Length: 387
Image (cartoon, rainbow, N blue to C red; front, side, top):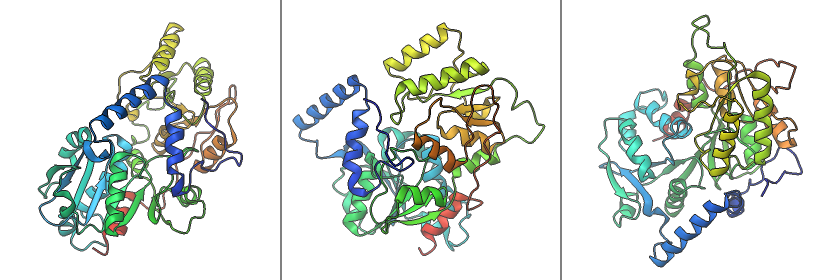
């Protein structure tokens, strides 16, 4: 099944909160048949065990000793979730939120909800100074521990941790704050109702909310991109821009037909000799088969898993966040697609991404301007200033 193309061009397919079930159906329809079958088996087994109504079963809630006023929902240990949701709490702990007069006291009331495997990975990175007790998402005592909940910080309500946090917030009349954690493509799930949205830019906020009056937009920038800018090597520090560079894979993406991603990659790889860097999600049978075909044709695949900042040369992709990460670091970066749909052209324009075409070397994509100098601290300051 190919992805739908929005008739209005660069506009989200799902922007109203009531569109979330439609987004879930659309997302599921993009899965390979084998994954859909496996999920159906898991769902059936859960129903037979009578725990299908408990999606919080696999979640872990890390609660401090005292009352919880803020619950942060983290879905994975990946860099985008870390930057969007963990970094504001680290900024609070470091005293970078200028408007918060007693950061330690505020930090003592921050709890976390995550999938079990994420909690295991992230727990050592959480701010020191507060003792956190881990309980199950279905622990009968959890409800009482969250009685004083005043706000939740989430990336959305479309994955288990965020869904649970938003539900617990609604039950207690608490605020819902959403942090944008990546670039916004046409299939981005909607912002939860009556939420504060910490967006990369005012343009992103306007695009995502589409004029909704229940969303308060606060443009703050991206901690992920700010980190890329600060970690960039000094000019003249080495041959960071030398070599054929890398093409960032997105074969797993549902926003475009797989053939589009293959055509774009092959066009660029043939013309430049760049290395193909598979996305961590390119583990399905079709992606592995495509990797084998490319390697048989002499394409070099980067399977090292090293950070993008450790690679050299230009960075190209169809619409990966890595394009802007490279641009923030001062590296040549651009987008590739031989026949982009309207939404993709609008996406490139919204982020100032330059398009590469064969035989015409483009100007590098410029860094994305940030509304604040320290996005994580700006979120912390706005979220906890009155606490």
